[in-house]
Amino acid sequence: MSIAFAVKRGDPARGASPLIAVALAADTALPKALSGLDKATGGALSTAIKRKDFSGGKDESLLIVNTGSGPERVLLVGTGAGDVKGVTRAATLAGRKANAMGVGAMTFWSDALEGEKLEGAVVGLSLGSWEFRELHSATPVATRKKPLKAATLFVENTGAAKGPLAAGVAVAEGQRIARRLAMLPGNICTPAYLASAARDIAKRGKLACKVFGRKEMTRMKMGSFLAVAQGTTQDPKLIVLEYKGGRRGEAPVVLVGKGLCFDTGGVSIKPALGMETMKFDMCGAAGVLGAMEAIARLKPRINVVGLVGSTTNVVDGDAVKPGDVVFASNGKSIEIQNTDAEGRLVLADVLVYAQRYKPQAVIDAATLTGAVVIALGHVTVGVMGNDQTVVDEVLAAGRRGGEVGWQLPLFEEYKELLKSDSADLRNIGGRGAGTITAGLFLQEFAGDMPWVHLDIAGTAYSETDLTVMPKGPTGTPVRTFVEFVRGRAR
Image (cartoon, rainbow, N blue to C red; front, side, top):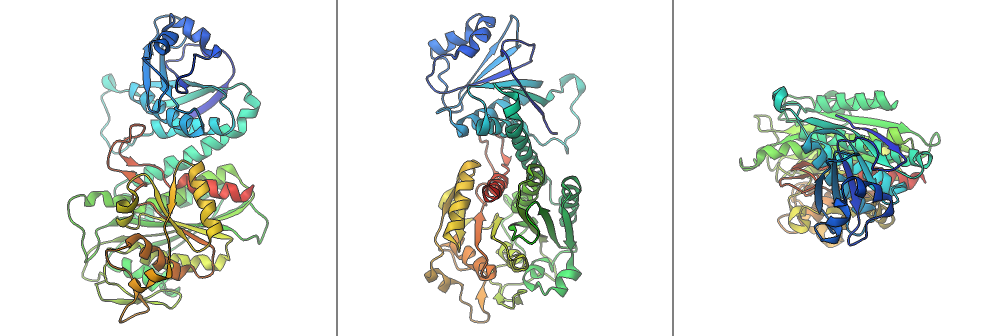
């Protein structure tokens, strides 16, 4: 469920809001703009700061129940340094707590809430308040809490706030789409379901949309992609979304997402423990679809193409086997030594398909390797590419969007690990440098395109509570995609 966002000027002490979240930087005095709110609460705000009950640190919060006039509750949330990142995180925490309280509507105040800070606050409130309830039984009315449906942010200039507000809503809606798709189980979110979601995005945003199935991909000789799909009765899908905001004929940015709606590992089957999380193996695809929703709303002056390769990797009598050799659409032969290294096989043909657009840049995102979790944990996206300028742009976009990445090398020496006795290359390189060899495998199909790969296996979803968000999908890499496109459009 989306949130209705609005902005207004005025004294935050006025109005009967069920909750006002007040974001304050670390170790600062109570701003003059909050003197009325402090008075309305009987000096509770200034007292809490004076007594160090609240000091404005990262993820710090303090709830004050107001028995006087004005807002019914005041939630103090810390922003740390008070920068854009701090305000966004504080808003995320505020959104989560507001949703848990069941207040239904809230207001938000932070000092100098304008521009990027305002946009970040909108994104944060949406991120924090999102929850997945659509497959649960209905809660009895007597105990049902109201989800957060409306949020109003205090600003100094409502006119100047329109742009950042709209941008924040665009990104927030994109993230909501990505998180919802990721959270749906594999028996519901099938390749056909992703295709339907893409058509809905295209209809809302007036995008061009094409969907190719097994027959079309066979004609396009996508043997690498189809090898993964040969064990499933579900029709695999190559989904194409085109946003035409730039000049006619101008080279587009191409966003590519891995859409494995469920991954058993195939014949190289995964352990049963934890396999249910493999419904998240389509988070790269969800990121592309969410980004295309946001881009259609933002309307940047640039052409963008979103490509999704979607199927399921299951065990069947027709499933691909270790040792099989298949041919990608660029003619390269691939020895499949491990059927659980399937995402790169799908992306190989999708990257070859991307070459027809002669793009200015290509970024693919995939929950590709467990090795990236060993290398970077659940905090940082693994970033690799064949063009350092584009890599640097992607890293900067990730920082702006709060999805921080770290570059890993694609040195020639690692290519030795992909040599095969029976084909041009094999789909795994052994235990060492697993993320890097996966990146080098993809590079073989990127051709001359300026290309960057994002390994989001450690960041697209969390198996633990993140304080500001519950366990589950995080929305990564929607903001990296969007910020890159916005940077290229400026």
